[in-house]
Image 1 (tube, rainbow, N blue to C red):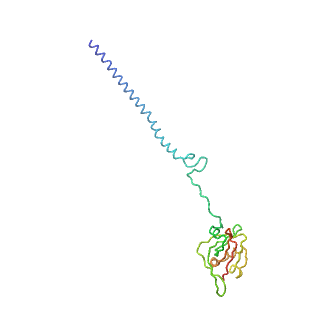
Image 2: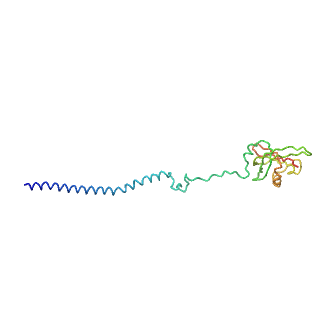
Image 3: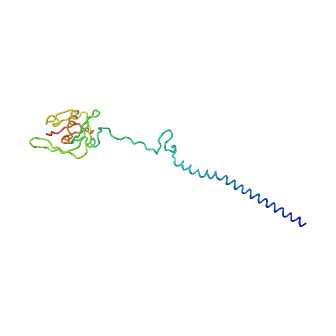
Length: 213
């Protein structure tokens, strides 16, 4: 009778041991499965910020190289500056604006014709009358830069010696004036002086050289 009770007590203990072992095995398999499935999640989570940063650094409508789709230029590429240089022979503001409607005494370093219009490179100077054995003018050269001015189409040119053929002013064409001035050496030109008259637009309407023996 005592022996029979002992067997009844032993059976539940064995079952408990087996159940505990089975539970331990199940728990181990569950943890192993979770560990195996966690690797892809980690990879996805780590790659998400990289993709987000790439999207944030690339402006909408542009590729990673900075070029807009369809061959256009992205905002990051600077365009070539526009050409703002003045055409050859253009009248400078220094001459046209400040001298409009005035008379100026100047030196002329050179003269040329471009596009059917006569241009002069001028610089203001001073003149002093010479009252010696003959009447003439002494030219006091200026110190400032030369400015380019243009002549009116009907502008007059009056020349005295040495550019002209006489001590008295004689009328010449603009083309003849350019030819005669160009023929003079660069050493003679600074010693010559001219009275210029400007019209209201800043173009030279009259050129008269001073007699210089």
